[in-house]
Image 1 (cartoon, rainbow, N blue to C red):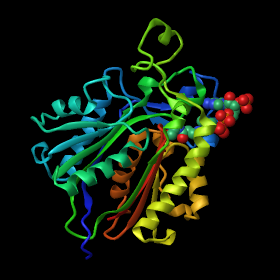
Image 2: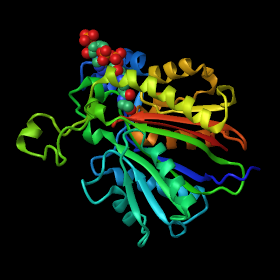
Image 3: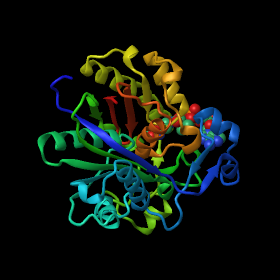
Length: 329
Ligand code: UT7
């Protein structure tokens, strides 16, 4: 065991809404085909939140499950950190709605908005807070209800997205397991390639913004695609370098699930064998910040994360933001 202080995951859980939207369902909503969606994105179905389910509702369920998995109660947590892009309300933070529903007393609650990279940004922020002594145990939740900001007339985006939430409980590691290294970056000059144009202080809600579909997610798909492949590959290389590891040391590569073609392109660029790359996009679509924590829980369920397994997480998203984390189980 080395002397480096690090944090580790001691519990995981996730929640996806019951309602499933298949590609066949989408064929009835927009001018698309199952063949196009599968060949261009790898997605077959996604879960969609009910009309009365907000992002916080998905997060609360995921958070409860992660606490149960860690054999802890909410009183054992001293910060609730919620990464999301679809807040319940502009303010207060979604984390506060979550905190109330978890009956967490007066535990501090904080949102983090960093596009689809939010969960990895959250892990890096949590690492800093735990190692500085500001918090001992953190419940980090990544949840989004993208369906609530989806333009169901825009076939270029609506076929790609799904709703869900995943959560982890974090504390300082007492053994060799935990975050070995991280790398995070942002480039705000590219913000308008993937954003919600109206509803904030830049363009407050008005009849005009509603008429212009300004409250929906807007994306320049192929621009995002190119940057995603380049930046996620860069992030993995840099994070590995910081950990003093090589690509061959990777046991499991877990990239953000935005598009199967992006995942495959990053894998090929980094020369990571396909069997080491975890993919579940066919069942969930792009759930934004929820993709990685949901996949972590599934990997644990499938017993693919044994003591010593080296996992590399990588994500890319609105902002633009991108990051990678090397994690040893
Ligand atoms: O989490 C991070 C955020 N998002 C992403 O990472 C997504 C990044 N981008 C992508 O995944 C891909 O760019 C898309 C899946 C969005 C699009 O794939 P593409 O291969 O880049 O297609 P394209 O945008 O170049 O469009 C090709 C054609 C167009 O028709 P024309 O102009 O060639 O006649 C589109 O109108 O495909 C058409 N098209 C569709 N056709 C059937 C676009 N969406 C659809 C659709 N069904 N759903």
